[in-house]
Each structure stands twice: as C-alpha cells, then as structure tokens.
Image 1 (cartoon, rainbow, N blue to C red):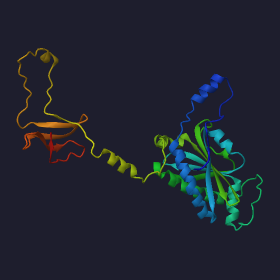
Image 2: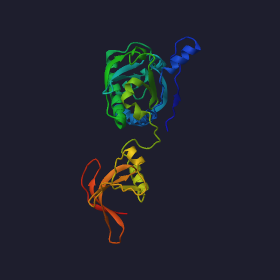
Image 3: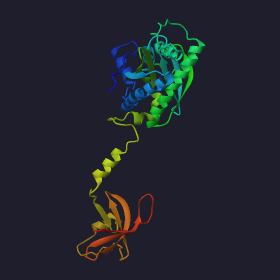
Image 4: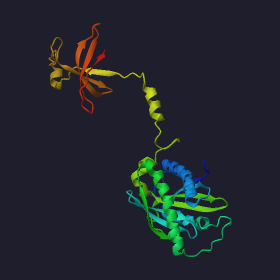
Length: 318
C-alpha cells in the first residue's frame, strides 16, 4: 500500500471574526471522495510502467498526499516555479491542473538525451524555454493518457492540454475559494526524480461525484464478477411469498356501512376469471385457477406482467 497523507482543508479563509470564518467554512463543501482516492492509488501503479516506457528507465510512482482544500491554496501549496498544464476535461466541462516539478522535468529530459550516468544538476529558477515547454507538454500528455484510462471505471473522459503556465499560481482552474482536491505523486527514476501535482476542482467532478463519493472496500475496479456469483449462490434455494388476488372490487363506504349479516355480495367473478399473482406487492403475472391431480389448488400462468410483456406458460402449485 502506498504511503500518503490525507488531510482536511487548511487555510483558504479570509481574515475576520470567528463567526465569519465559521460561516465561510460552512459554505465550502469538502466531502471526501473515497473512490477517487482508490483510483489514484491504482493510477500510481500504472504511472510507474508508463514512465518506464516513456523514458526507458525503471521508474516508481508513489502517491504521497491527497488533500481537500480550496483551489487557490491548493495551487499555492505546490510552491516554486513548476511547469503547469491547464487541462480541459471533456465532457465534464471543467479544468484540471497538472504541475510538473523542474526536478522531474529535467531528470526525464536528461535521461532521454543520454545523461544516465549523471546525478542531475541543480535547477535555478528561471523561465522555461520553448524546447523545455514542448517536452513538458509531451510529458503531460503521457501522464494524462494514463489518467484517462484510470477514470474509465467511472465514465470516459478526454483530457487535453489547453495551455502551459510557468507557475501553478498562474493557472486559472476555478474560483479561488472553490473546493478542490490536490494529489501529489513522487516519481523516482533510480537516483533522481521529482513530483507530479494534480489540482482538481470539485466543479470538474460534478457529473461523476455520486460515484466518486461511494465507499470503496478494495479489490479490482470493474471486471470482477465474483460478487455476482456470490450473490447467485446466496439466493439459491431462497423462498419468496407470493399472493394470488382473484379479484378486487371497489365499494363505497356508505354501502359497506349498510352491510348486515346474511347479505350476499356480488364480486363479479365467474369460472373463467384469472387471478393476479404478486410477489412482495409487485404484480408478476396473471394465472388461471385450477386443481392438480392430487386435489391441490394450482395456478396456470397465462400472461407475464413484467417489463417485457411476453406470454409464458407454466404451472405453480399451491
């Protein structure tokens, strides 16, 4: 299991009285998204293989932090200059921020240019060159391709880089105080590497929030039919109580109050009248009344009342 910290929102509140801060905090939604946490756990495993194919070097990706906090503090917490891709998520109609630390960017760049033996160089803050930005976009597109595959469990999404920023604080994803999630992954390429930070505003996840907020007990995401088999075994041999209603008559309350012992009530039922069979109050089918050879009352199914409306034939003993 990857080690990571999971923190509740910190900061993001304006100066003011305690009452004002309580009201402001209450206006922000920081509902946990357990399934999103599980998705990024598995995404970290897949990302290591993707980096290995991209840079041709053994790579390990570890999920180190998963924080719920406002959008502006989430971007500020990344700190320092970092090549940041502002990504458009379709059809979710929102944006995602992906910040690539300079250490990670230049580690991958040096390795792909043949600098495998060196221990890397200390990067001094400056603007990224056109070549570095172009390479950073390729790296971001590779990372986003794996993220698209990870999100297939909750619905397809296409992630496209809209533009690049030299600093996370320059990225505009949502209003500053809008709730967001910041995910940090540490990527290690032998003796070098860096971090990847994702900032996802809640508004971007609005369409899939009901699924992401569900508790996820573990196991594989999708493709596991074991629970179906277990459910099938658990209901085999179970009993269900059915009710046969021969006829229903609507009678006024005045008529009922006038009933007296000895009165004959005409139910309007003849010999060919069919009964309606219900299970747990839900009509299932119509059936003709009869008797079996052993004298038991029986029903012969004549019409299915299910959604398909197909006629069935069969016999259900009393």
